[in-house]
Image (cartoon, rainbow, N blue to C red):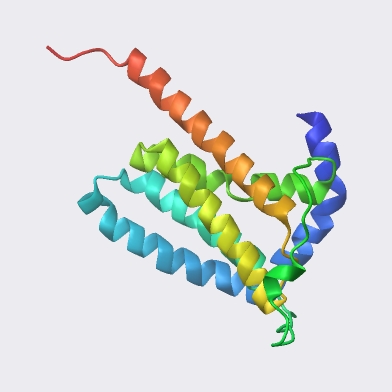
Length: 179
């Protein structure tokens, strides 16, 4: 764990600079309000646990704000298919940015799994959200569309959903049966 945190340390300044941009913080707060309120209102109807569902919404709000609400960006040339600009690289945890991408959807996936009790669905949704973010970055120029980012986001979410599922299974085994 210390080795992973050592790799993230050089990127802490990048994280602070991204979160320090007024647009990112404003988008995070707005998305928290929208996603959190929406999930809080519908969670009972869908049979989700309210608190973990709301925490999942906050995790998703952070991921969306950090990746899509940064200053800058540029629309690609209309004659260019933005998806052709995506870098075709592979999974890696060899740098701070790679570790941050691995962690990006873990709060969402962990808490969404606890809320819905459907880890496979959350794994698939996480992969789709990550792919949507990468495509949005290609179309808006707000980031670099990378296969590695998608893989890191997705693998991190799969691990988090798996941990949540194991936690639920462990706690279920310890719960005394009611007569």
